[in-house]
Length: 512
Image 1 (cartoon, helix red, strand yellow):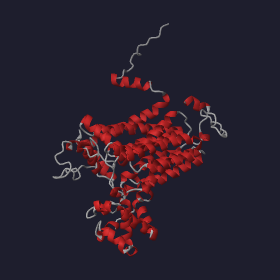
Image 2 (cartoon, one colour):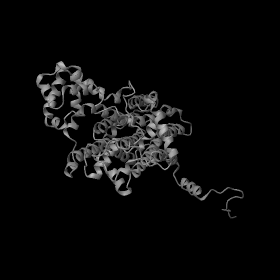
Image 3 (cartoon, one colour):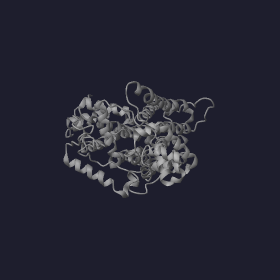
Image 4 (cartoon, one colour):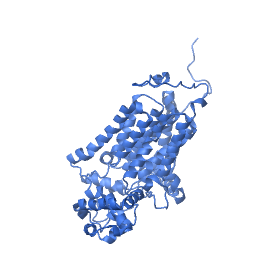
């Protein structure tokens, strides 16, 4: 008896595009359907933000990137890797929309991957789905992926690292997760010049979480760090990319001097003051030191940068003497600048959030006599949205999220860092699973890197921990192995074999 393959009478046929989409979905392996669906949903929301602010949100740094790559003034004070992406987008498409679109795609895929890792850790599907969607819906994090900023690429790399750590925490052995972790660490290394502490600290936390894989952890963290250092100090200078100025490298030391002089001028010797006067009036040193949270007020005129570079060794001697005599002042200045990494904001100005508008003068670059005046690339540095209604809605949502009362929840990376650690500690105690400590590795690295060196309390420096904090919340609902339904038996605990790794579990072999 033959089987009639024709549709049943009265059955509704889908339109061809939807039918093709259904057939494509049927070809996706069952275990991959949830992360793919989450990635697609996140991409849809990110595209709405992208269209609302097309070609993307911008800042002073954005204009600096474009000026550098279009005039031959390549410098490594910003991320050269991100400058290359800016250059490619301009050369291939004539604008920056392609770059921001690529960022939405990679972020959406990374969020889908992180969702899959949360499910592997026992998080129920609904919560594993809601967390990535919250990341893209909430304006503080959803719009961050469409900024033309090296920090946006840096945050995307952090999300990818979190997803890889989630899979490694449940001892998923396929090499894919290690390669993705290495790719994420490489992104962290090249998209921010001071990210070396972040990668090294993340590696140390991973080593404490899963020590038996120390060789792979070392390869995934130390190799990207070594490559990034080699690029910055050997390759870039060799190909003509200008290194940052000496005054940029040691601006933190100068700021420490200013804070100490403002608070305890009697601690300075006459010879110290003589050196400082050659760089800026003492009233400026004291004025710049009054604001311990920002380096920029000190480095602005009348601070003489060429003089500071010429007298750099003597200024560092002043800094050393202050450190020996009044270490409390230097430590206080450092912790004040790094407050965004460890403390809750005290005032509305402790965390600076970039407005969602591009001024007509392109942050001063397009003024007469300035570097971008008359540049043919100025049209690429403006908002050119396809829908004014969508743009107004995007601006309204972004502006509403900047309400001072919401700063602690939506824009404070330090708070979400500590929250992530508490959540991970609960997972480790609940399951119990020491390897779950790996989930805190990326956040710990990001937090330490900002604490070590940050020039100001800008949201973008601690945006990545906010994204990872949102993704960590569903772990509060992660099921204990004993709570699984009968269809999911609890795997037996394995004894560690001294000197070699334990044999893989049957389900791990099947997953591989």
